[in-house]
Length: 409
Length: 218
Image (cartoon, rainbow over all chains, first blue to last red; front, side, top):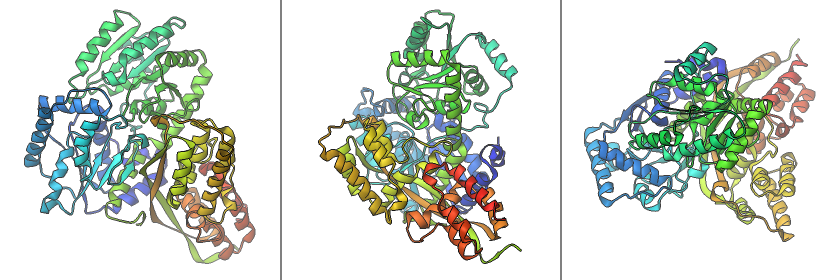
């Protein structure tokens, strides 16, 4: 595990010093983070890094998760899809089951934090305890990591009853904000530049990974790293590859892990394998959670990185690729336009054909691709690294103790 | 002999958290309406946050209103007019806001039709929660001052140049120039720093320029 001081070479001593100083103002407060899964998916990944760093800068941060059986996670997956605007049949019985599991968790969990930060919809109902006398002085924050801009009204209204009980809500993009009675804070997520997924790798490690997966190191490579999820449009990525392949010889890598709260993944993976249809230049990998070095190497070995999402929370894989100075073509959805300024730090696309056009442009114009990648790296360095994210969370926790919009520490 | 101040320069820093207001615009008319309703913190946010966000390159439109008008509505002329408004010519944020309103109103009065954007391209009105903190660093001489400047974040530079002088309009000059003029007795250097145009530099380049100017007087 990296120490906060290890980031000095990347962001500068003065930035680390500043974070430690603001962290010291939270002395004596316990920050309790709660989400639904310890492994898999962007939220668990961020908390796994963030909580130890918070502790190191003097913030007593803890991390707990709710429990939920297979049925609960099927319901929350449907809710997740529905919040992204997909049609899902969520029955009254489903909602009732969600509430029952929430009550079970409330009975079993100890909400001991002074500031309780709940991540995403699965544990959202825990805020019910705020009405309890023992919890009235606690501050509750709902951290929404998903794109609510096309949320199904029925599902959102079900959640809104809980959201408006919180003291603060936090969104990853201005586009995800809704009309709410509580303050809405904007905190972009981040990547960890020193994690196995993002740190520099020796060329030999990259070569070894390519050999292990049977990828031709000499051939132009288009890569999408994402969970096997319909919202990431892996089938559309194959369409893009086939359009590009007509004109430029290339190979496609589709690689992703699975989260424990995502039962749909296997189904989508099988559809992708079927659509690949035995094409030897399409490499589809379902990677276990500990495959960070492999993902890092696959991104670094890519000629172009794609993120062809139909809907996206923030799309951290874009920042991961940009950090590696890779040219990225990504859909202009969710938080992706915050990471890519079109034609400056990457290319934003809206259609399969447009995506294919941009991929061809980048493969055939390496200098242009290099410039976009370098600009993207600089943008990520200043705006989407874990140190900025850590600072924003500490500021938000501090804000819960002040009413004014200008806080003098 | 180097001048020594009676009162040290105390370095503060300013950090912010963006807050969403929930208000947004899909066309020029709604943007104008939103600007009219916006208070100082909203106007300030949309005309200054880019200085911190884009620290390595100068964006083509140096404020959010101009950027949105140009990039989303495709109105290059109006975008350029709003981009080029000189903030330092205005005594208050209200005056600056009025100039933006006047430009948009004049443009609309010529009956020019502008487009509506989709929800994904909307203009989101935002403000910032500001945190101000003493860094604990102090300088009594110009040398000490520049040594600290080299090792503080751009957020501190931002605070001392913009907070009292620009955002709050409670001081005639930026903090650096005031201290250098009153305590170090170097009005020429104070003026040179005051005359730097932070809106056409990146904040990192701006910091470098202040350091270079100051080094010439040590």
